[in-house]
Image (cartoon, rainbow, N blue to C red; front, side, top):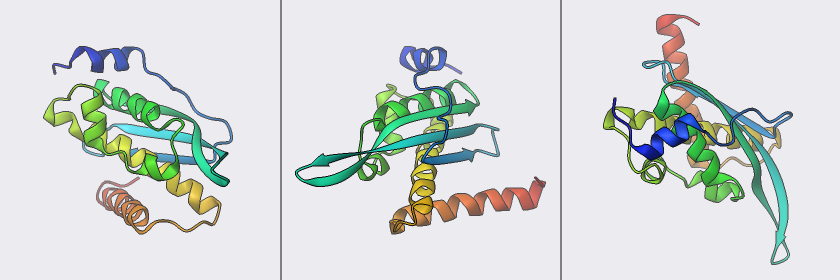
Length: 158
């Protein structure tokens, strides 16, 4: 597999690696076909903007078991969302992650989708814990992720 220099830089020296103690939200996803597993934890902060309280991702860390692309995309998604509002963070898509890295081999695009899903799951977890309204699109995504996990468990066991 041939990766560009930027992907290799993020693989060899990832940023925001680790796990936040007592996170406000956590997301864990995996690709059962390739074995990649991503865990992302977030800490939420609040700031006033034009007299309105805004929530933002104050800190974010990841732990990933997987290939170079999985580690690189995990690192990149943490950089893209740190300091961003939850709404803006949820708008980050896998194509933006791939573009930030200067490209990925097509067979590795699923890694960027995992990074996007791990972030969505962490935000979902945060909103659920706070008993807040979960946007329809985020709820649908969460259900799709859980359905895929359940199907895999039924087929292959835990």
